[in-house]
Amino acid sequence: GMKLIAAADYQDMSQKAASIFLKQMEQKKQSVLGLATGGTVKGVYSELVDVFIEGEISFAEAASFNLDEYFGMKKEDPNSYFSYMQEQFFSKTDFALERNHIPDGTAADPMEECSRYDRLIEQAGGVDLQLLGIGENGHIGFNEPGTPFEIGTHLVRLTESTRQANARYFETMAQVPKEAITMGIGTIMKSRKIVLLASGVKKAGAIEQLWYGEVTEDFPASVLKQHPDATIIADKEALSGI
Ligand code: GLP
Image (cartoon, rainbow, N blue to C red; front, side, top):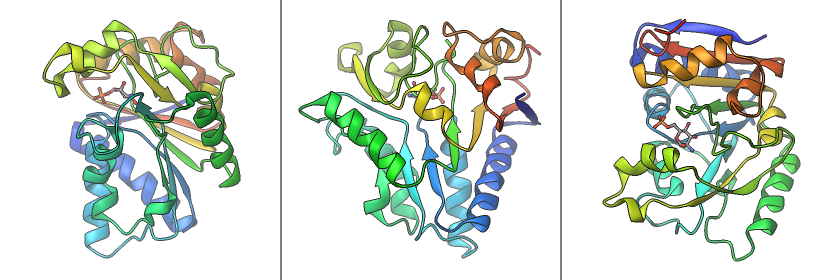
């Protein structure tokens, strides 16, 4: 079953997750890292950047695959997940940029982009360590409730609740994208190790359901109960329901 690590607060959660990444990088310099965006995981990147600046880690031989990207979004758009990753992590470390992969939100043929992305992950040898946040409705990546567990990277229509949860980054609701390209649950489940982070009282309901609820496509994160090496790291507030 899933492991649960209780953290005191956001910083403690971030440090505990960063140490799992450090251990992974120590064991394998050429690790394939599965990366996520959102507010929750920012602290992990800043911890890893600090350790990099101290000279104690190198990502020069690593590769990365991000979970998702808004569809129709140009890389250069400040709201793209590409921009987020550059800003939070890639530009501040020694990653080889040609090995930092993010779905192309401007692909003319999204279906082709999705299968290209899954092929790339496979060619890289699969993801060694996947970082995840969780949506209030249990979504992982952008796999919304009802998504079949088996499918790979695909184009999704975002739910209104997810659009609203992400609206804080945009000036108007109309600017919040309606679609995204996301790794599928099938893609995520192939990673060898998974770490899911949750912080704050807003996530307490999701963590409660993840911990006590059944495995169901109506609550996408519940699939992690079927993964051989999945760990939740949550802070006190996120754990307040369990
Ligand atoms: C978006 C991302 C998810 C992320 C979720 C939660 O929907 N696609 O990968 O887990 O937001 O974000 P936050 O960490 O900001 O609550």
